[in-house]
Length: 233
Ligand code: HEC
Ligand code: HEC
Image 1 (spheres, rainbow, N blue to C red):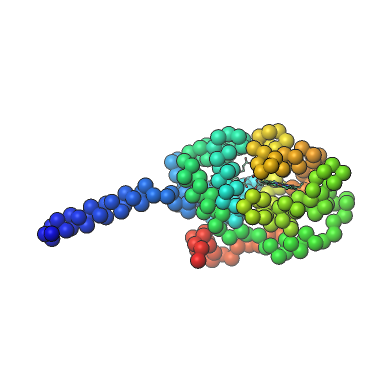
Image 2 (image 1 turned 180 degrees about the vertical axis):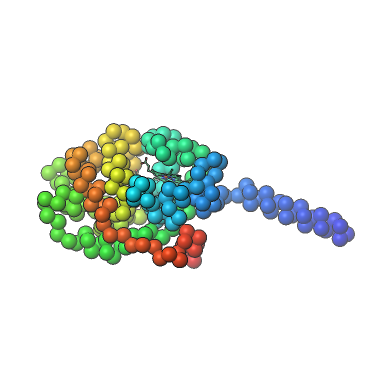
């Protein structure tokens, strides 16, 4: 091979590698910081570390299950989960991009202080404290188990399918419970949540939402940005 044809072959090789990268799996982190296909950057609403924005009612995404997050993005894209804020964004992403960004957020560390939250779950609730009572004891007179039984002690979340509730904005939690009552969100695994939500009164929805929103959560150490935190050893 002459030097000239060798450099030509190298250039071709570089071109090939570049186009393979372009066609490869989408970069979830890049979607979160820059958006894609006209969808805005997720961090503008969900926070630089996926911690959400309680004042604005934007949910925390960091550390929720990857399959759960992907399912929600797909549902918001096909309209079965009605979300005026998210619909256009979810639709703009293709399925592979939805999967990539869902996995990225699932890999970020949760901002929840799980020890403290588990300890709050041990505190005895008074029946008059409706939110705490529902969360830790349920309402068995109408077949509603304690929310913590599925969502973990203090609402820290369990595995892939039971999302964390602690620290989610009260308006967001209440909005989701009402969406299930109104058929504006898919039933999810075994239809568990529509069964729960339709048995709660309006006051109970507000009380239990305020309870979870008010639980102590941990601040993520400032140095831990999505970049370093997302990288798994
Ligand atoms: C303009 C603000 C905004 C932007 C930008 C935004 N979101 Fe959202 N997102 C919301 C709001 C508000 C909700 C709550 C949905 C609702 O109330 O209908 C939400 C809900 C979600 C949920 C459901 C969470 C759950 O616990 O079920 C996911 C997943 C999500 N967004 C992912 C993303 C991704 C990925 C991006 C970037 C591609 C993004 N969002 C960009 C505001 C935003
Ligand atoms: C029998 C198990 C079970 C019980 C009890 C339960 N949940 Fe759930 N919950 C689930 C599952 C499963 C999901 C995920 C649904 C999906 O994938 O769409 C969920 C999701 C949610 C969500 C949506 C979270 C998000 O990020 O969008 C909220 C809010 C919620 N539950 C609130 C409650 C409250 C409040 C109670 C108690 C009154 C409760 N749940 C009791 C199983 C349960």
